[in-house]
Amino acid sequence: MKATATAPSNIAFIKYWGRKDEALRLPENGSLSMNLSALQTTTTVEFSPDYTEDYIEINGTRESNESSRAVLHLDRVRALAKISDLAKVVTKNNFPTGTGLSSSASGFAALTVAAAKAAGLDLSEKELSILARQGSGSACRSIPDGFVEWLNANTSDGSYAKSIFPHDYWNIVDIVVITGKEQKDTPTSEGMKRAYSSPFFEQRLQHIETRIIECKKYIKEKNFKLFGELIEQESLEMHAITLTSQPPLIYWHPGTLRVMRAVHLWRQEGLGSYYTINTGHNIHVIVQEKDKEVLAKELSNLEEVNEVIINYPAQGAQLSEQHLF
Ligand code: PMV
Image (cartoon, rainbow, N blue to C red):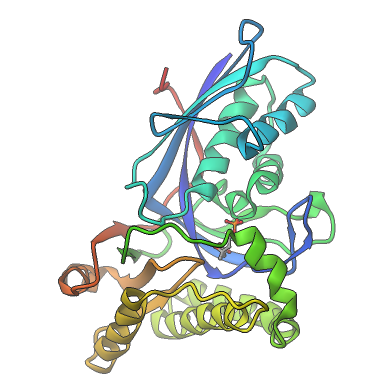
């Protein structure tokens, strides 16, 4: 059977950094995120006895099957469905490629939902999230709707994401700011292994539960100022871990710092905006709906900024009838 799914990327407000189980992708801590409306992946999967090899195509280019995480993920689905058919997978991102925007969350969420359906599995949202997590950790948060919590657990069955508020609960905006074309040079998996060498990592884990509770409260109350202050501090703290890991990891580029400083300045002038940064030079500026036009324009005017992409809170992964082949 052939099936297609579309899934959003997500931005973490409380970050996943460090894994207590590498193989199962169990994080050291819970995390919170929001699905992104303008960073979406669509994937069509077909299992067939006629295929003689797995075929994976991403944005028009065939991917090598050697050490492919997508093939490993298809193996997980085949094992669950007890089938041995090989698959054709065609996948497209609706956002610019080669800009350092990570597509693994949207990619593995779309692959999980499409492959499970194509293999004849009837999985719950929780089961899909657990499966997606094994492909790429943050992908488990792209399965449920809107604002999402990935629960902290010591077992695979307990480590899944669930919606805490629907996408239309709070109309905040994430302006994704592209500050360069380079891809990141150190993969996230490698960065996470190094986290344990930072003298601050243990301390981070000690207060992260409290921070998750606070962040959920501020989202619930729609308290933009306290929410913004907390997520910016949280992002800087994750980067304090990467900066003090051995060997150190510096993800920021001059353009990233330029935007960080501009956001601080705009805040002093009364324009409420806060940033959060993942493992790359691009930066997410979180603003209120009423300020989005003026801030998108200000950001676009910065010399170091190539492009801005406006995102609203979005639904999670969905099946679709619009097959790609
Ligand atoms: O799921 P991964 O392996 O792409 O890791 C995501 C790590 C961060 O983006 C830095 C934080 C997060 O929670 O998304």
